[in-house]
Image (cartoon, rainbow, N blue to C red; front, side, top):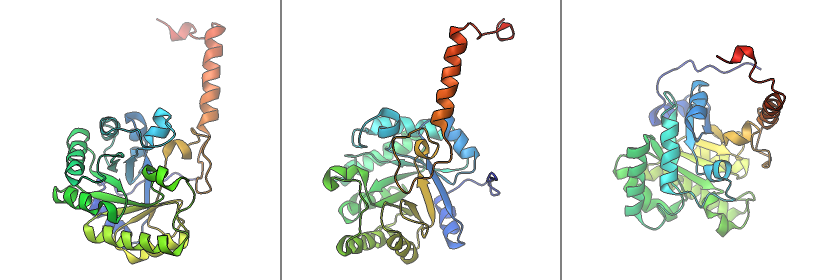
Amino acid sequence: MSTYTATDQRKVTTRRLMEMKERGERIAMLTAYDYSMAKLVDEAGMDVILVGDSASNVMVGNPTTLPMTLDQMIYHAKSVTNGVKRALVVCDMPFGTYQGNSKEALASAVRIMKESGAEAVKIEGGSEIVESIERILCAGIPVMGHLGLTPQSINKFGTYNVRAREEAEANKLLEDAKLLERTGCFALVLEKIPADLAARVAQEVKIPVIGIGAGGGVDGQVLVIHDMLGINQGFSPRFLRRYADLATVMTDALGNYINDVKTRDFPNEKEQY
C-alpha cells in the first residue's frame, strides 16, 4: 500500500477546505488528543485534526462524552496544537458549555481559542443551538456543525443506532444542515446516518460535509484515531476500518520488555554507561 504525501504544504484553513470541496478533493480528518500523536498525524498529511470530546472515552475511560470539562478540552487541544504545523485544528465544545446560554457559549469558545491555540470549534445540534453559534461567529470564531448521531445527546436518544432513518427526522436533519450553512458554519460533520441522506446533504449545501458512518457521498471522512489504529478493540461498528493492529503490536512489545527486564537481558553492555 502506498503512503500518501501531501503535495500542498500550505497551512490548511477554513477557506482551503471550501476550495477542496469545490474541486472535488476529499478531506481527511482524524482525532488526536496529545502532542506526540498529533505531530505524527500532521506530518502524515492530515487536513483536519479534531480534538474530540471522544477523549472522554479513549483517554479517560468514561462510557460517554458527557463528563469532559472545558478545562480538560483546552488541555488536550493545547497539547495537539503544540505538535501541528499544517492541519486545521478543531476543538469540540464539551457538553454543558453552549446549550441554552449563548453568552456562556461565547465565553467557552473564546477560552478554547485563547488558551489552546485551536483554530475552530465544533458544536453538536441544529436549530436548538443556532443562537449560540451566531454569538460565537460574531466574535470571529469559526464553527463546525455536527448533526445525526450527536453523542452528547445519547441520554435523549437512548441508543447509538443509526439516526434519521424515518422521514420526519431526515427532513429535520436536512433543514438543520441548511440552517447551519446559512448561519455561517464553515463545515459540517454527519454521524451515523443513511448514506443516501448524507450524500443529499453534501449536494445541497456548499460547505464541506465530513462523514463518520455516513457513506462515501460526502466531502470527507473522520475517524477516532484509537479506533482506526486498532488500539481500542472494544469498538467495532460497521463504518470503522482498522488500518493497523497496534493493540497486538504494543502488547507484544510490552511483554518483550518485561521478559528482558526479568531475565536481566535488558540493559546489555552496550546499553549502559
